Figure (cartoon, rainbow, N blue to C red):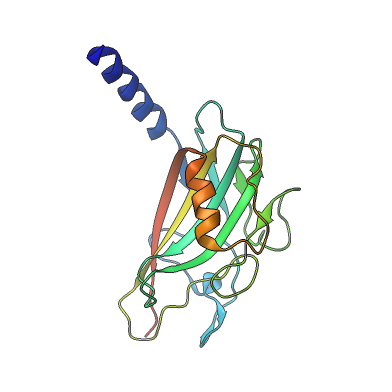
Amino acid sequence: MKYILLVILSITLVLAEGFTLKSSDFGGQLAKVQEFNGFGCSGQNISPGLSWSGAPKGTKSFAVTLYDPDAPTGSGWWHWIVVNIPANVTLLPTGASGKAMPKGVLEIINDYGTAGFGGACPPKGDKPHRYIFTVYALDVEKLDVKGDTNDPVVGYYINAHTLSKASLISYYGRQ
């Protein structure tokens, strides 16, 4: 029995390793184009293009988040939460937030208080912050949330239905 469980666990880990997230708009560093326009920042606030592949069998939808764990709030900062992305969609093009999202996709109100992408805006002089982009493969077609559902509740539903996830970490700082 132990051997069977070990084999199942190994197969699960190998399958999860094939799920990847990529962006041609940034590497290890975000750019001014992805900086927020407000809160003392003057960027263009354009959502980066993201693509993913290798979702596990049984994926019925995707969710995408952007989180800054280094924000000086005590709880981080949610910059972008996108849910109900159909299972046949594996790309959010550059600038899609608020304009070119696939039908049925829902952008949740971020910590700036707006629905959609809210770019990087760390305080001047802080060390560069980490910005974690994550795509989640979900086992349901739609999460039972609305655009104004608060972040912790949306996070709960995302995590309760996650089959696998893939992340990219980028950095951004202001002088």
